Structures are given as structure tokens and as C-alpha cells.
Image (cartoon, rainbow, N blue to C red; front, side, top):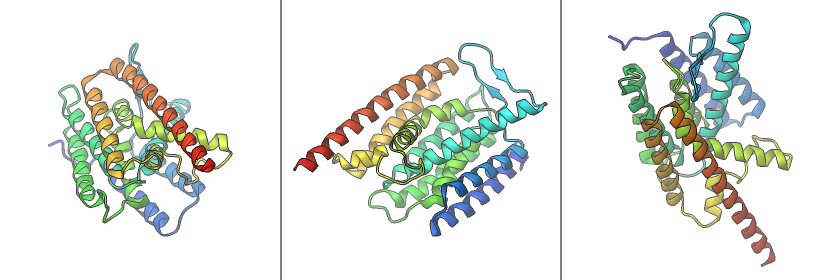
Length: 282
């Protein structure tokens, strides 16, 4: 009786249509980062109007912070938080689509994590669990043909759709952002790292290059299948931790995972730079 077409489900349908159209447009004619950013704002506005909002913030050290639903400032704060979350996940997931099987492997684990989380007695959200399971099934069907050597590619349309579905499901019917943030810690940390490097280099943060972790590992001699398994294994371990901990545990787990990931990114970056200098000398 709970499986009804609610406003949130309508938002998912309309949002998926917008993401699909913009993604296909970008696949055929590469859009500027300003255009992509504009559509991400439009997408966030659409979700916000349909009621998909961040209304609570879990404080790991105390009570839950509730954002009032009335008043300009609380609504603006909720919208900005939603925009930041949508932009972070959309771009982090989109940038994962660089090697065969990488995008599908990480996203299917994320969908399954949301699925199991939604079925936990203290959460008990069967509709969200069903949507997450559909997302996992869709991704599994795509992944079958995308493993190395890939016969099909996700493109911007596929990558943005998966990122949108993860970001929206994380907010619908109770915030699951902490869990999704923890599970996606590797691609999100990589995205933040790459943005920082591009800013230091004085180039656009949306400029395509080989700075992402999966490209650097490939340049160090890792096979594409090894990189995919590495990302999948690490994401799977983090997912188990996310499902086994509460707010405080997730907070400390996130700090630990980010510290480990950033340390590994620093190690790989130095290793790559050393190899480039050695190749130039040769």
C-alpha cells in the first residue's frame, strides 16, 4: 500500500528526463561547464519544488538539527545544501566514467547499500528500497556489457542519470546522505583532489585531463581490470562499515577513510610525478 506515485517519485521521473536530455545533448555536442552547471541548478530547483529537500542534519555529537520549513533563510539554507549535494555527487559519479567497468561497479554497490539501509527496521522505507534495487538492476545490466573490454559506454547521459538517482534517493524520505557520502568517499575525495590540483594549475576545474586516480594508476602500469577491482573492493568494504555504524561511527569512519584516501592520492601523485621526471630524463 506504500508503493504509490508520490510527489517525490514524480520528481524522480521529471528529473531523470531532464538529466537524460542534457546528457544526450552533451554526448553529441560537448556542453560548456557553465551550461552543465545551469542545468544542475535547474535540476535542484525541480527537486526542491517537488519536496525533495534536506530538512535535517545529523549531529554525530548531539541531537539532530532540524531546518524549519518556514522562513526565507531556512529554505535558502536547505536549497544550498541540496545544490551542493547534487553537484558533488553528479560530478563525482560522472568523472568515474573513465575506465571500463569503473562507473558501474561503484554505483551498483552504492545502490545496494541504499537498498539494505532502507530495509533496516529503524528506517523501514520499502519504496526507496525498491527504487534502489531497480537502480542496481539497471546498473548490473549495463555493467555486463561495460566490463573490460567494454562493448558499450555510459556517456554523460548514463553517468549523470546514475549520479542523479543516487543523489535523489539519498535525500528522499529521510536523509541518507551520511551513508552515501561514506560509500562514495573514494570518488568524492578524488574529485576534490583533482579540483584542488586544477585550481593550483590555474585551469578550469571542469577541464578534462589525466589527473584522476584511475588514470594515474593506469599510467603507473595497473591494468583496467585491476583498477576496477580495487575501487570495487574498497567501496564494498566502506559500504559494510556504513551499514554497520550509527551517526557517530559514520562520522569517524568518514574522517578515517578520507585521511587514508587523501594519503593514497598524495602517494600516487608523487609516484606519477617521479615517473614523469624519470621518463623525461630518459
